[in-house]
Length: 82
View 1 (cartoon, helix red, strand yellow):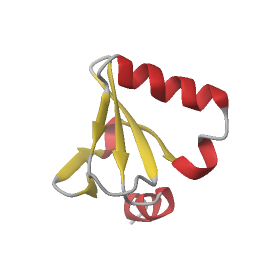
View 2: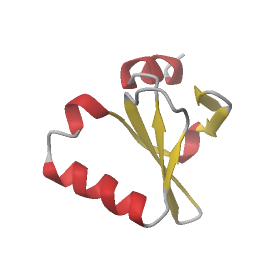
View 3: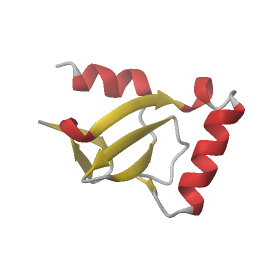
C-alpha cells in the first residue's frame, strides 16, 4: 500500500517507521538533534515549500529517509488507517 505525503510524493507504507507532528515533537531537544543530523547527512526530503506540519521517518534496505510534509500527522495517520 502507499501513502500520499503531499505534492507529488508517495511512499510505500511498509517502509514507514513513524509519523510525527512537528509542533509537538520538536519541543524535545532529542528530536531537534535527530532532525538536524538527518539534514546534515542528506536524509531529509522536503515534500513541499509550504509550512511543514509533520515528518515521516522511513527505512528501506538499511537506508533512512525523513520526509517533511505540509500535511498534519493526524491526517497522514487517518490516510494510513483507511
